[in-house]
Length: 337
Ligand code: NAD
Ligand code: DAU
Image (cartoon, rainbow, N blue to C red; front, side, top):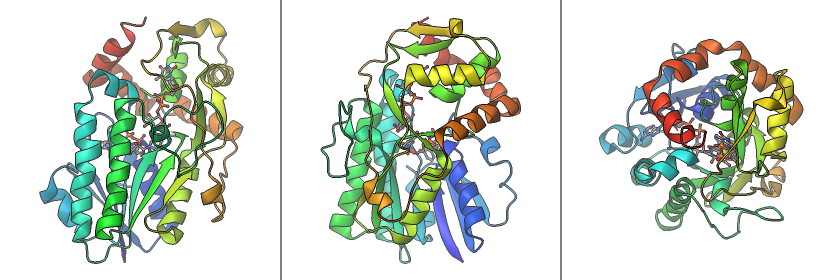
């Protein structure tokens, strides 16, 4: 049986990937190492927790005694675990350096000793390129991360590469654009806005709303990673972009329409510090391998909005009863309100 280790598999993309991998590969066993930070939730795995091909391990990637043996036992590692929210990294960056950089280092060190390891996928992000005024980023472009989250991811991205170049660890680096889909923590723009609108709470739009993000359905992301596990080339970087560049104000209008709400619920707030204006990826390298996004944005967005509307059991306890969430929201939006 093929052994896949997923780190951060109780988070948004990780939980979608665990579900995807169990379904797509009936001969795989998935071990899922997650610290269950505020963003990692057992609820995200409610339908796979009892699957005999899934083993959940509650632990920290920075803990070599826990993470090391799991990496050493794996054929494939897909490393999602990270602190991921830009606004939190602007408030306090320590956890980002610890988990994103040092945690990746712990896993890569273990990967050097892993006898059967075929692939170590370092999940990076389009944010490492920094803001892209025109054109689209290709994998060889200079990295110019502009916020502490993006810089921590860029550090891990290049550290992983160095373990391929120096130690021959079978590393592949992926840089994806903004994912959307079910189980995204409601501090990110889409789930925050959809769930606010359900309660007629205004949606806080940063700055002039003209910032552009490229939206990728989480399952298209999963399919891209799967293709690279099988057919990628070690030491290479692959962009995974959705090809749906949308201004935040336009995204907001679409969500308002899908929610049957009016524009009076848009609340312009102070801009994010160092707010990257635009991300844009060329995915030509991955497309040449046969990958293409399958979920049309209009359809994916409508389904995603409907998912949050139909799954209050999932998000309402976070928004209404999680003290970490409440403290973050007060710190973040209190001052902007
Ligand atoms: P998320 O915040 O929803 O989940 C992160 C998960 O990592 C959580 O389950 C959390 O408990 C876990 N985790 C955090 N610190 C840990 C530690 N020290 N040890 C073990 N587990 C730990 O994040 P996401 O949005 O699903 O992103 C997953 C990965 O994809 C990240 O590496 C992120 O940088 C990258 N990425 C995200 C996007 C996006 O749009 N969300 C786009 C490109 C790349
Ligand atoms: O681009 C990939 C990145 O996408 C990932 O690497 C990150 O982990 C992920 O969090 C995401 O980062 P963003 O900063 O792009 O996502 P966020 O949802 O926080 O913000 C999306 C855009 O919406 C951004 O331009 C800021 C804006 N925004 C966000 C929030 C939370 C608002 O206008 N209001 C808000 O309340």
